[in-house]
Image 1 (cartoon, rainbow, N blue to C red):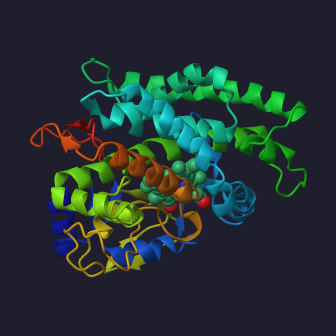
Image 2 (image 1 turned 180 degrees about the vertical axis):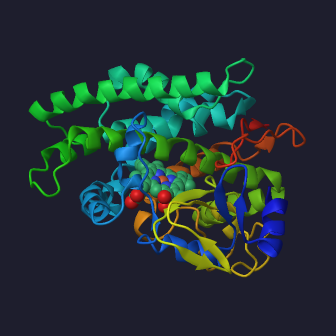
Length: 375
Ligand code: HEM
């Protein structure tokens, strides 16, 4: 897909796709301007089957600002840093299962389960509910099941059912926490009394489910993609082993070079002309951040993975008012887990370099599995 982006940036940086009825936008410069202009490019989407369409990511100002101020309190750098021991304990638990196996799948054993467990405890899901919780979440975040004949309609139905189950579950949890508040995000949101910012139960549910979805597969892909960047080129892995302090820089470069999310949607509010093309109110746009992050007008040697790239102003977490709320959390999780993997398995190698299977989704970017051998 990177070749396609390159062609589009050179030949048709803004193009109306007749099939999807969406404007595709490919240049860094255009995308950043659009992200910084929420007045003309709206995030509001409504779908009664999707509770997250009530949530912060689908809100415009002024409601967005109120909500963001509120939830920012639960996501300050200090709070996030304070989750370190908890995340580390989760990593330890998961790595125990690998023990001294000489071969394992990074996705299945750690990159996939870790973010879900972490976000569930931050939201305040009791440990005893974790299994059913995981099952509902999976029915939302997983696409059509491999090796099954599940049709798109069946998959959508399963997704809506997952949303419904999770919504019912959160309704009960909210009731419990109202009478017995605890030290978690849901309790903080429920406790807000001020009328102008107070959240309805529907909004609290939407936000909880958003955190689950926005924070799960994205972080899985970040962990997997970074490990892939290490193992694909042994000289990168050697540098990391010699100097593990480079891991945060490697994570930033992976965010740019193999961005976990490739496109951000917006809806045009007022007619506007970009590069001679007229976009009309009501039109939808797809901002291809996966392309912007390879734009040579922004990044030298954009198609090369450079551990020392400075500055690295990638758009992997978006930009402007909707800049990813969970960015510090996913950076922390990735840093902790990658540091541990590098330390424990210094002889790690890809099992089969020629057999790396990417995810099928056009919007997300990651791998179905990453099989490694450790000796
Ligand atoms: C927003 C990417 C992890 C929660 C965003 C946006 C992007 C993004 C591109 C902007 C969407 C837009 O402008 O419409 C990522 C990536 C992640 C990641 C690449 C991991 C590598 C997380 C985590 C959480 C999270 C761990 C939660 C714990 C959110 C929320 C928003 C958001 C709540 C909406 C913020 C707002 O509307 O003000 N994310 N995300 N994300 N992300 Fe993330």
